[in-house]
Amino acid sequence: MSQPSIQEIRNPIRMLDEKVVTKIAAGEVIERPASIVKELVENCIDAFAKHIRISISKGGIDLIQIQDDGIGIPEKELTLAVQKNSTSKIQTERDLFDLHTLGFRGEALASIASVSCFEISSRYANQSSAMKLQIQGGVTKDLSPSSLSEGTLVRVQDLFFNTPARKKFLKSPHTEFSHIEKTVKKLALAHPHIAFDFDREGETIFSLKVQNSYLDRIVELYPEGIQDKLLPITGSLEGMSVHGFVSNSKLSFSTSKEIWTFINGRWVQDRMLQKAIMEGYRTALMEHRYPMAFLFIDVAPDSLDVNVHPNKSEVRFSNHNIPFRLLSSSIVEKLKKPYPQYQNTKGPVSFFKEGSNPAYNSAKSFQQTLSSNQTFHSPHKPASIWTQNSTVDVDATQVSLEAPTLGYFSSLRFISQVDHTFLVLTDEKKLILIDQHAAHERVQFERLQKLYGSHGKYAQQLLTPIQIDLSVSEIEALTSIKDFLYDLGFEVECFDENTAMIRSTPELLGQVDPSLLVQDLIDQYMEDPEIQAWKDKMDQIFSTMACHSAVRAHDILTQTEVHHLLHEMDRIDLGSYCPHGRPTFIELGVSDLEKAFKRK
Image (cartoon, rainbow, N blue to C red; front, side, top):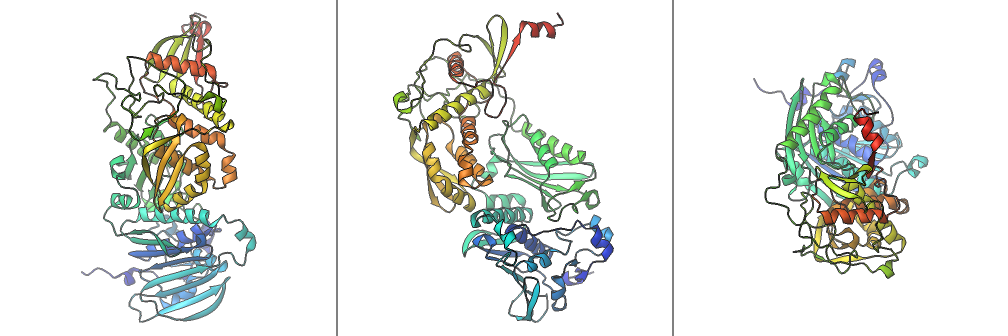
């Protein structure tokens, strides 16, 4: 028996029954240009398109044009398609609980056409010609033949021309474009079997071919070598399954921007799913760090409600415990397998500058000379936080780095390092436990504050520039903050539309991977792309820089390095808490110990 054609299985566009309309979570679906792109591309996907072309001008405010090679719309249904609550995707109330399409409300085209100069051309499969419908601000202007060869072409121009109050609340074209870029990216990730061409002002942003797998699409969208940092993940629990990829513990970000979750082919933004992912990484990542994750969840449609919000990015599970357990346990198991517990079988490996990373040529650093026959090993960093034989020009910076007389912390007796994370000390009257990362992070944070406040800028030139791969939006964000980064000690040059070169870094940071730090600063700016507001967040920026430059949990410290850290803690003003608000140390007095041992 032959398979039915797409035309035979396609339902006609029709007005929804009033009872169905009342069940739909109706509302405004057009918040910004990215909302339009999402709705129109989802229509292309539902129309069985194999190739989608997206063109943008002025952040989508002046023009959004989307063309596909899908099945098209029959001539007699074209005018009906732009009426509110008309759709071919559902017919009855029961269909809301068995959705197999991305769209179903029948609101998008009507909403878009009401606030723009709207044009839709479509040629239905096996139809001899195409038709074009023009609408301005919700008013039909013309219906005429078109020369379109296949599929559907939609042009949206002069968005919100008739609602200036709404247009006023749009952000800059750059910001609106970054939202569009993310929208196209998530749609492309969810549908690797579809080719995407995406351009802005006639310039290609990316051109994606048809791929056979999700990993192939990920590799296509991300810098070379990304697959080496990803771990495949699969799991199933009580009728629900997940597959995809998560980053190893060496790759992390300052925001959750690289967490992508999809349910039944639909991108969703769900707090519970993100909490489940972070629970899986709880012991693998530092606090306030986020992994990269591409997770594709399959679940029976009747156990999921996507009819929660007009943008369909929020979902409601019939039992939210199942996806939480599925994701968190699957990630924990995967992170365990490739990383056996660390065992130091060859003795400690130097974390000091000794051989030196050839990319760095530090003219100045902290006024300190550490001499020790012992060294320590870090599974996270290739070079020392505290560099040898390096100094800071104290007069120029007006920052006092002179070693004080013994203070509270430096007078303590060091006993041991627990789990290469917590320092155990005593003054004979109490026990003091120090979180080595939190403490050093606070030290670095206050140093950065003082250096910046004294208008000192001490950069170390890199003998070999370090390349950082970025998206078009990230390059534009970098251009916006380039001068500000220079004031912090970063000299970063935009090499092309997807590459930047780091030529110097703040000397205070020591030998830290600058590409990760610059990426984090770009991410923070893109979260709030108003440069003045960003400058007002200096403490947040310093916190990010301090976190990158601080010694990590599980770094093995020598006694010399422990004592150096204790001296540094004596020099700072607010050493009780790290910049993120976590305590740097706790004290256990005799009375605390007596209570613990039931002596009191």
